[in-house]
Amino acid sequence: MTPASLALVRYGCVPEVARFETGDVGPLQRDESIVVETPRGLELGRLLDFVKPAAPINGSDESPPATGQVRRIALKADQSKAALLRSRAEQEFAGWEQRIREWNLDLQLIDLEWTLDEAKLILYVLNERGPECTKLALQAAAAGFGVIEVQPVSLDGLKPIESAGGGCGSCGCHN
Image 1 (cartoon, helix red, strand yellow):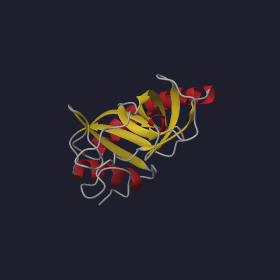
Image 2 (cartoon, helix red, strand yellow; image 1 turned 90 degrees about the vertical axis):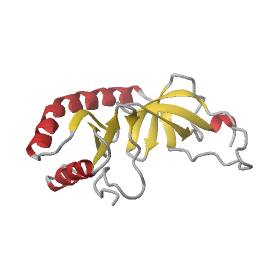
Image 3 (tube, helix red, strand yellow; image 1 turned 90 degrees about the horizontal axis):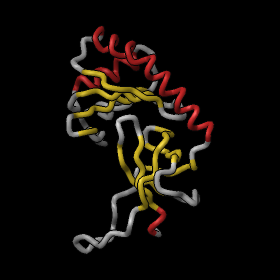
């Protein structure tokens, strides 16, 4: 890969920084608003920098895989839709707090957001990954709320969703 084929992008309302393949999108500039395809769906992101080639570590020239793909430079329509979805999330916040209380879950909701393609609602909770997160995803699915991803956040930041075990994520629950 050429040095400019991977970009560092910040995305999400509880920001995450990850590597994205740029493909044929370009030319891209630092601090540009872009649409990225993440494992959660389409999201707005902000280009931070391009990944520079790293020196081999322990004789290996493999670098970690990219999180997703840069799809395009964000259009005004993308920015407008993101603003509408942010407003929608703010309006839905109190309802999700109430559901968490009614379902007797020991979680504190700190934020929520819709992906740009509206494929998924992400609920950010102040909690360690564990059974309460899994219960929230299951309760939401059982109540007909569609695909919900529960993203735990600790005082140290986001807790990554592991590919096996532990649950907590979009329902399927990764068990």
